[in-house]
Image 1: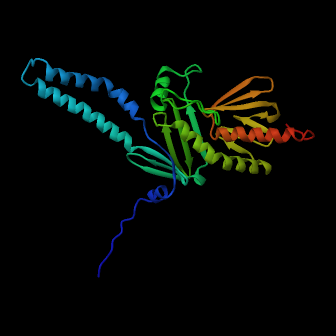
Image 2: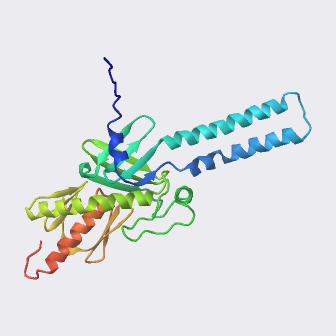
Image 3: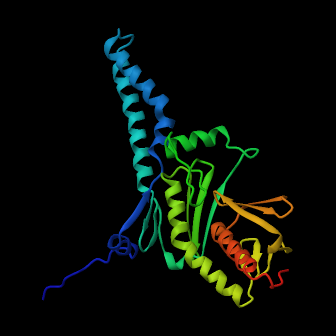
Length: 279
C-alpha cells in the first residue's frame, strides 16, 4: 500500500497567497547602502590602488582582495537580512514576516491602529529629514486624504487585535501607503461601531481618551463636544482647537482618524438639531 504524505504549509501562507496583495513593505535598502557606502568606497579604492599602483609588500594585493570581499559580503548579507523582513497588505488582512516569527491579522480581527512620530521642538530633526529622504525618496508629495506627511526614521505604525501586534518603523518603504490603507480598511468599521455604542449611551475608549455622546474625557476631565471647534490629525497626532481658539495637543491617539470622524459626525448631528441640549 502506498502512503501519501502531505506536509502542511504554515497556516498563514494560504491566506496571503490566495488573496490579492495590496502592497508590500520592506526595510529600505537605501538605509543599508548609506551605512555601508564609506566602507564600500574605501575598500574599492584600496583594491584598485593595489591593482594599478606599486606593491609595497608581498601580501598587499591578497589582503586588499580579502578586505574588499569581506566588506562587500557583509553588505550583501545585510541586504539579504533586511529583505527577509516584510509586511504584506492583502484583501484578507496584514501579514508580517520577520526573521524569527510570522504574524497574520485579518482586517476584522484588528481593533486598534496607532501612528507615532517624534518631533524635536515641533519640527523634524536632521536625522528624521535624512530618514524621510532615504525611505520615501527625495520628491515626496503630501497626502491630503488622511494628513500623513510621509515616513522617516522617527515614524512608527502598529496594528493590534486578538492579543497580537504588528509594528513597523520608518525604515520600511512606503509608510504613507501603509497608513492610508490601514485607515481606509479599518475606519468604516471603527466609526460605525463607535456611533452604535454611543447611541446606546455607552462610552468609547481611544487609548487614554474616552468619548460619550456629548463629552470627551481627557484623563478623566470632561470637555463638552459643543466647545470643540475642530479636531485635526497629522501623522496620527491629535490636536483639538476649542471654541475660544485654545489648542490641546494630545499626541498619538489610537484610532485617531476614526476619533476625528466620530466627533465631526456628532457635532454635525447636534447642529442639525438646534433644539437639542448638549452638555
